[in-house]
Length: 244
Image 1 (cartoon, rainbow, N blue to C red):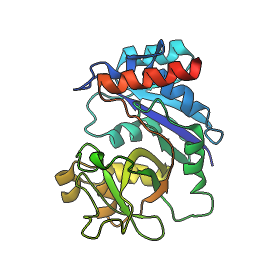
Image 2 (image 1 turned 90 degrees about the vertical axis):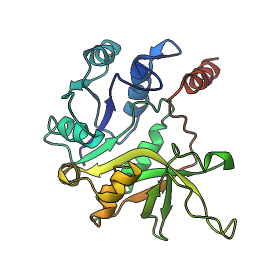
Image 3 (image 1 turned 180 degrees about the horizontal axis):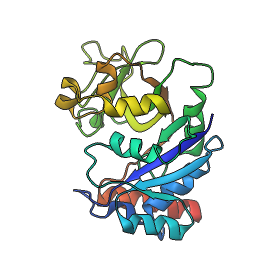
Image 4 (image 1 turned 60 degrees about the vertical axis):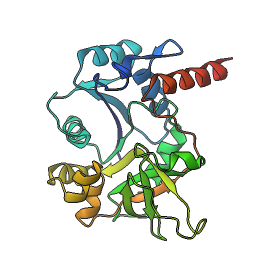
Protein backbone atom coordinates (compact mmCIF):
# COMPACT_ATOMS: atom_id res chain seq x y z
CA UNK A 1 0.00 0.00 0.00
CA UNK A 2 1.26 3.47 -0.86
CA UNK A 3 1.15 5.24 2.49
CA UNK A 4 1.25 8.99 3.03
CA UNK A 5 1.77 10.57 6.45
CA UNK A 6 0.18 14.02 6.61
CA UNK A 7 0.86 16.45 9.46
CA UNK A 8 -1.69 19.30 9.51
CA UNK A 9 -0.34 22.55 10.96
CA UNK A 10 -2.01 25.90 11.58
CA UNK A 11 -0.18 28.93 12.95
CA UNK A 12 -3.02 30.10 15.20
CA UNK A 13 -3.29 28.60 18.68
CA UNK A 14 -5.28 30.03 21.57
CA UNK A 15 -3.02 28.78 24.34
CA UNK A 16 0.33 28.81 22.52
CA UNK A 17 0.51 31.38 19.69
CA UNK A 18 2.64 30.33 16.74
CA UNK A 19 2.84 26.82 18.17
CA UNK A 20 4.24 24.98 15.11
CA UNK A 21 7.24 27.30 14.97
CA UNK A 22 8.09 27.28 18.67
CA UNK A 23 11.56 25.85 19.18
CA UNK A 24 12.38 22.45 20.63
CA UNK A 25 16.13 22.17 21.25
CA UNK A 26 16.64 24.89 18.63
CA UNK A 27 14.41 23.39 15.92
CA UNK A 28 10.79 24.38 15.10
CA UNK A 29 8.32 21.93 16.63
CA UNK A 30 6.68 21.11 13.30
CA UNK A 31 10.10 20.03 11.98
CA UNK A 32 10.64 17.82 15.02
CA UNK A 33 7.30 16.11 14.32
CA UNK A 34 8.17 15.78 10.63
CA UNK A 35 11.53 14.18 11.39
CA UNK A 36 10.02 11.60 13.72
CA UNK A 37 7.15 10.71 11.40
CA UNK A 38 9.50 10.44 8.41
CA UNK A 39 11.47 7.73 10.25
CA UNK A 40 8.50 5.34 10.13
CA UNK A 41 9.61 2.42 7.97
CA UNK A 42 6.20 1.89 6.37
CA UNK A 43 5.54 5.48 5.34
CA UNK A 44 6.38 6.30 1.71
CA UNK A 45 5.88 10.07 1.87
CA UNK A 46 5.72 12.45 4.85
CA UNK A 47 4.32 15.91 4.30
CA UNK A 48 3.18 18.92 6.34
CA UNK A 49 -0.17 20.41 5.23
CA UNK A 50 -0.50 24.05 6.20
CA UNK A 51 -2.28 27.29 5.33
CA UNK A 52 0.57 29.47 6.54
CA UNK A 53 3.56 30.47 4.43
CA UNK A 54 5.82 30.75 7.50
CA UNK A 55 5.22 27.10 8.39
CA UNK A 56 5.64 26.01 4.77
CA UNK A 57 8.96 27.84 4.52
CA UNK A 58 10.25 26.49 7.85
CA UNK A 59 9.59 22.88 6.79
CA UNK A 60 11.13 23.30 3.34
CA UNK A 61 14.19 25.08 4.74
CA UNK A 62 14.58 22.17 7.17
CA UNK A 63 14.68 19.79 4.22
CA UNK A 64 11.12 18.49 4.63
CA UNK A 65 8.14 18.46 2.32
CA UNK A 66 5.11 20.70 2.70
CA UNK A 67 1.94 21.56 0.77
CA UNK A 68 -0.25 24.63 1.04
CA UNK A 69 -3.97 24.19 1.75
CA UNK A 70 -6.86 26.62 1.95
CA UNK A 71 -7.30 28.70 5.09
CA UNK A 72 -11.08 28.33 5.32
CA UNK A 73 -11.33 24.66 6.33
CA UNK A 74 -13.70 24.20 9.26
CA UNK A 75 -12.20 20.86 10.38
CA UNK A 76 -8.89 19.06 10.34
CA UNK A 77 -10.44 16.32 8.21
CA UNK A 78 -11.28 18.84 5.50
CA UNK A 79 -7.65 20.02 5.42
CA UNK A 80 -6.48 16.40 5.31
CA UNK A 81 -8.81 15.61 2.40
CA UNK A 82 -7.49 18.57 0.39
CA UNK A 83 -3.89 17.54 1.05
CA UNK A 84 -4.66 13.95 0.00
CA UNK A 85 -5.93 15.19 -3.37
CA UNK A 86 -2.32 16.15 -4.18
CA UNK A 87 -1.28 12.47 -3.91
CA UNK A 88 -3.52 10.54 -6.34
CA UNK A 89 -1.63 7.26 -5.88
CA UNK A 90 -2.02 7.23 -2.06
CA UNK A 91 -3.89 4.24 -0.62
CA UNK A 92 -3.48 4.69 3.13
CA UNK A 93 -3.32 8.01 4.95
CA UNK A 94 -1.78 8.50 8.41
CA UNK A 95 -2.68 11.72 10.20
CA UNK A 96 -0.14 12.78 12.84
CA UNK A 97 -0.87 15.91 14.86
CA UNK A 98 1.65 18.72 14.54
CA UNK A 99 1.95 19.11 18.31
CA UNK A 100 3.22 15.57 19.03
CA UNK A 101 7.02 16.01 18.91
CA UNK A 102 7.57 12.77 20.86
CA UNK A 103 5.69 10.58 18.37
CA UNK A 104 7.34 7.16 18.07
CA UNK A 105 7.96 6.10 14.43
CA UNK A 106 7.28 2.48 15.40
CA UNK A 107 3.81 3.44 16.61
CA UNK A 108 3.04 4.75 13.14
CA UNK A 109 4.24 1.45 11.65
CA UNK A 110 2.13 -0.53 14.13
CA UNK A 111 -0.94 1.53 13.24
CA UNK A 112 -0.39 0.87 9.54
CA UNK A 113 0.03 -2.86 10.25
CA UNK A 114 -3.57 -3.08 11.49
CA UNK A 115 -4.69 -2.75 7.86
CA UNK A 116 -2.54 -5.61 6.53
CA UNK A 117 -4.97 -8.46 7.11
CA UNK A 118 -8.27 -6.64 7.43
CA UNK A 119 -9.77 -5.49 4.15
CA UNK A 120 -12.83 -4.18 5.98
CA UNK A 121 -10.88 -1.80 8.20
CA UNK A 122 -11.22 1.82 7.09
CA UNK A 123 -10.13 3.84 10.12
CA UNK A 124 -7.87 3.29 13.12
CA UNK A 125 -6.49 5.36 15.98
CA UNK A 126 -4.46 5.10 19.21
CA UNK A 127 -5.12 5.10 22.96
CA UNK A 128 -3.14 4.68 26.16
CA UNK A 129 -4.19 3.77 29.69
CA UNK A 130 -4.37 6.65 32.12
CA UNK A 131 -1.57 6.58 34.66
CA UNK A 132 -2.63 9.67 36.61
CA UNK A 133 -6.16 9.46 38.10
CA UNK A 134 -6.26 13.25 38.30
CA UNK A 135 -6.22 13.46 34.49
CA UNK A 136 -9.39 11.41 33.99
CA UNK A 137 -11.85 14.20 34.78
CA UNK A 138 -10.06 16.78 32.62
CA UNK A 139 -12.33 17.42 29.60
CA UNK A 140 -9.27 18.22 27.48
CA UNK A 141 -8.25 14.56 27.84
CA UNK A 142 -10.53 12.58 25.56
CA UNK A 143 -11.55 9.15 26.81
CA UNK A 144 -12.38 6.10 24.68
CA UNK A 145 -14.04 2.78 25.51
CA UNK A 146 -13.62 -0.28 23.29
CA UNK A 147 -15.35 -3.58 22.66
CA UNK A 148 -13.60 -6.94 23.05
CA UNK A 149 -12.29 -6.73 19.48
CA UNK A 150 -10.58 -3.40 20.09
CA UNK A 151 -13.13 -1.31 18.22
CA UNK A 152 -14.18 2.02 19.68
CA UNK A 153 -17.62 2.07 21.30
CA UNK A 154 -17.54 5.76 22.22
CA UNK A 155 -15.28 8.77 22.69
CA UNK A 156 -16.05 11.38 25.32
CA UNK A 157 -14.67 14.34 27.23
CA UNK A 158 -16.44 12.90 30.25
CA UNK A 159 -14.91 10.18 32.42
CA UNK A 160 -16.01 6.92 30.81
CA UNK A 161 -16.74 4.29 31.88
CA UNK A 162 -18.30 5.53 35.11
CA UNK A 163 -16.60 3.50 37.84
CA UNK A 164 -19.49 2.34 39.97
CA UNK A 165 -17.40 -0.74 40.65
CA UNK A 166 -13.84 0.55 40.71
CA UNK A 167 -11.14 -1.33 38.85
CA UNK A 168 -13.46 -3.42 36.66
CA UNK A 169 -12.27 -1.88 33.39
CA UNK A 170 -9.43 0.12 31.93
CA UNK A 171 -9.85 3.87 31.51
CA UNK A 172 -8.10 4.91 28.33
CA UNK A 173 -7.01 8.23 26.91
CA UNK A 174 -7.48 8.78 23.20
CA UNK A 175 -4.43 9.97 21.27
CA UNK A 176 -5.33 11.92 18.14
CA UNK A 177 -3.34 9.91 15.62
CA UNK A 178 -5.37 8.31 12.83
CA UNK A 179 -4.98 6.08 9.81
CA UNK A 180 -7.55 5.88 7.01
CA UNK A 181 -8.02 4.17 3.71
CA UNK A 182 -8.02 7.00 1.19
CA UNK A 183 -11.50 6.44 -0.21
CA UNK A 184 -13.03 6.33 3.25
CA UNK A 185 -11.27 9.53 4.26
CA UNK A 186 -12.71 11.36 1.26
CA UNK A 187 -16.20 10.05 2.05
CA UNK A 188 -15.80 10.87 5.74
CA UNK A 189 -14.87 14.47 4.96
CA UNK A 190 -18.14 14.87 3.05
CA UNK A 191 -20.35 13.55 5.88
CA UNK A 192 -22.48 16.13 7.64
CA UNK A 193 -21.66 16.91 11.29
CA UNK A 194 -23.60 14.65 13.66
CA UNK A 195 -25.37 15.39 16.97
CA UNK A 196 -22.88 13.63 19.27
CA UNK A 197 -19.95 15.08 17.36
CA UNK A 198 -21.33 18.57 17.86
CA UNK A 199 -22.21 17.96 21.51
CA UNK A 200 -18.75 16.66 22.47
CA UNK A 201 -16.84 18.63 19.82
CA UNK A 202 -15.14 15.39 18.78
CA UNK A 203 -15.02 14.86 15.05
CA UNK A 204 -14.33 11.10 15.26
CA UNK A 205 -17.85 10.57 16.63
CA UNK A 206 -19.12 11.37 13.14
CA UNK A 207 -17.72 8.05 11.94
CA UNK A 208 -19.31 6.08 14.79
CA UNK A 209 -22.68 7.81 14.42
CA UNK A 210 -22.70 6.80 10.75
CA UNK A 211 -22.10 3.15 11.67
CA UNK A 212 -18.39 2.88 10.83
CA UNK A 213 -15.85 1.06 12.96
CA UNK A 214 -12.72 2.65 14.39
CA UNK A 215 -10.00 0.21 15.47
CA UNK A 216 -8.06 1.33 18.53
CA UNK A 217 -4.40 0.42 18.99
CA UNK A 218 -3.40 0.40 22.67
CA UNK A 219 0.08 1.83 23.18
CA UNK A 220 2.53 2.08 26.05
CA UNK A 221 4.29 5.09 24.52
CA UNK A 222 4.66 8.39 26.32
CA UNK A 223 2.77 11.31 24.80
CA UNK A 224 3.06 14.99 25.63
CA UNK A 225 0.93 17.02 23.24
CA UNK A 226 2.23 20.58 23.32
CA UNK A 227 -0.60 22.97 24.23
CA UNK A 228 0.99 25.20 26.88
CA UNK A 229 4.29 26.81 27.79
CA UNK A 230 4.66 24.13 30.48
CA UNK A 231 4.25 21.36 27.89
CA UNK A 232 6.83 23.03 25.68
CA UNK A 233 9.30 23.31 28.55
CA UNK A 234 8.84 19.63 29.44
CA UNK A 235 9.41 18.49 25.85
CA UNK A 236 12.50 20.68 25.60
CA UNK A 237 13.80 19.07 28.78
CA UNK A 238 13.28 15.59 27.31
CA UNK A 239 15.06 16.49 24.06
CA UNK A 240 17.98 17.99 25.97
CA UNK A 241 18.25 14.80 28.07
CA UNK A 242 18.37 12.64 24.94
CA UNK A 243 21.00 14.89 23.35
CA UNK A 244 23.16 14.75 26.45
